[in-house]
Length: 78
Image (cartoon, helix red, strand yellow):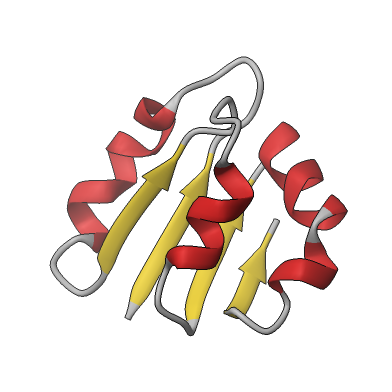
């Protein structure tokens, strides 16, 4: 099972580090930067289904691109 994390603004992938250690034993963890210009392409490359977890500007990005991602994700947590 794969969990994909998107941080907020301001923020970085390190925002997820405190929970990553607890989850990495049971899940594949992928942390992507919302500042990456090819973020949507990166998300589309991830084998599905995956759970997408985001907050702040990351959550906005997910909601903006929901139609393009809805067939790739198992769950979305905003």
